[in-house]
Every structure is written in structure tokens, then in C-alpha cells.
Image (cartoon, rainbow, N blue to C red; front, side, top):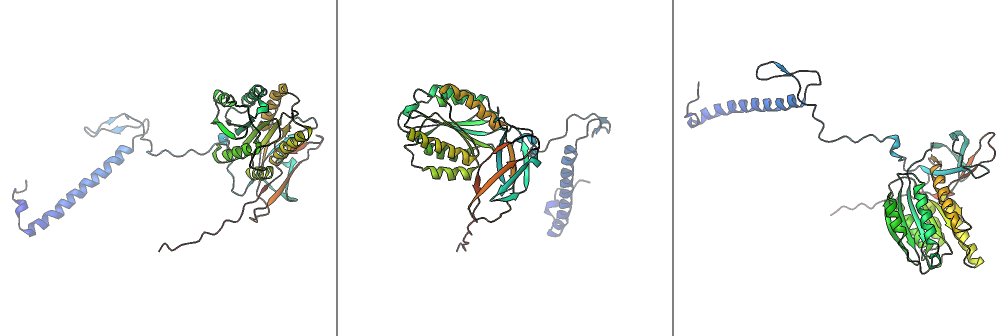
Length: 366
């Protein structure tokens, strides 16, 4: 029966009777609407038939299930090359060599022992793999380097070509000042372009350049493992940052530094000071120092450094000393392998502990 056209003009009592019916009908409609998307979203799996709503027959499925609107984050894989660690974990990158200075890469965890301030530590992480590295190449561009830059640039490119293909590299050139001439990239042409920005003049602000490179590597690097390759031909004579401050920054950073000294053009006294400075920087970081006799040896040195970086062990432990006092802690790693003769291990000499965070003063906001 069709409703009377005068229904909405019934007295108030009649209208109150109409509203429940309308609400009931609206509720049914919403229920149907809520049910329909579910039937659409629950598409039949492959091989199952779908019901044809017109004649009740079955029809083959026409599309695959609807994917979720928000993609789930993938679980990190082993080839992510990232070391997910606890915040208090001390990470060491260690190079092991035999009596002929050849790398030893087949050792087991049981052969390693680690001490911190003469207290033996228990290793939590041990592995050896060729992982990508974030690298900074820091090149002397002072006046005395004018005739050496071509050979040095070729060696720097050789270093990159001998490294892991996933490495990211930046270039810092320095004389009286330090300049970031190429930011992180894996493009050899871009790195060559940065190396060719030669303005060989002025003094040698090596420590300032190191401070810049350490800061940039710490703040901007993608990979966990970080390295600096430093090439210079003389004593620092223009930096505002002292050597002692650079050494402390190195010890706080866990960045390995390889230094190459093309020394000999200055006075013997100045050469000795330059040599000691380069050795101190590398030793503190767990890197190594090279003093090629001539420019033709630099490419071989660059290849050796790349191989050294790619054949290191990763050792990590949670310190037994949990005091957050900000003090320097000496680290020592020893390797003992039966019937393998004397092996040498090189890693950073120590680190600075974290400090106790300051309590934040709460304010009422009134």
C-alpha cells in the first residue's frame, strides 16, 4: 500500500510513529551498505567461483585480492649492511695480519680476547664481511702539493675503484682552509671532478680539515662503518684546531683514519713532527700510516688501504663498567691461534664513555 500523500501532515502523534519506521529503514540500509564493501573486499581466491547476483550462477574471479592501502615495512635482511646494536655497545673494527703483514681473514671468535681498562670483556657480536663504508678523502692542496696532485688524484680514484661498489665517498681539499668539494656519492666522475678542483697554494691546515671531515662523516654518513683517507706532504702550519683536540675527536668518533705522508721536502725536524702527527692520528683510530718513498708508490698504497678496509673483523661488547663518567677507556684486543705463529691485531686504542644525561628542569607552564 502506498502511503498517503498527506502523511507528513499528520498530527504530532502520527509523526512520532513515522520516525521509528524511518530510523529502522535507515538502519537496514546502513547495514546493507556496511555488508557490501566486505563482500567486495573479500575477493574469491584463485580457483574459487564468485556468485553472480543477477541469476544466482557462478562466474570466474575477475581480479586479484586488493592489496593493503599502507605497505608494511620490510624486515631488514642480512645484506642491509647495518649493525643494529644497543646504544651502549662498543664496536671495534679490527685488522689481523701475519708476520709478513698479510691480512688473516679466516679466524673464529674463540681466537679473540678483548680487554677494557685491563678487564676482559665478553663479545656479543663477531663477524667478518665486506660491508659498504662511508668514506671521506681528505687531500692536501697547499702550495707544495702542486706537482704531486695529479699522481695523488689518480691514487684516490684507484682507491675508490678498489673499494666496495656500494661505498659512498666525499672529497675535502685543504690548504689554509678546508673545502667540501664533493659530497657523498658513488659516482667516480663526480669524485674526479672534486679532486680536480686544484688551487695549490698557501699553507697546510690539516687539523682543521680533519675536524671538518670528522664532523661531516659523523652527521651525514649512511653506513655504520666510517673511514677517512688523508693525504698530505708536510707539517700542519695553519690550523686553528690543535692536534690534541683532533685526537680526542677521533677517539670519540669510531672513525678509522688512514694517513699517507708524502714527506721529505721540508726540514728534517719538520718532517719528524709531521710523521709523528700522522702516526698519532691513525693509531688512535685503529687505522694505519703509510710513507711512500715516491709518488709512483701512492697508487699501490691506495689499493692496500682499500683491501685492508674490506678484510676486517667486527667485534662488539657491552662494557662491564656501566658508569657514565665520560672518561677515556683503554681497549686492547689480542689474537691467539694455535700453530699460526705470531699474529698482529690493529684496532682503535680506546673510546670515551658516555656522560650521565643532565636532568631536565620541569616547568609548570603557568
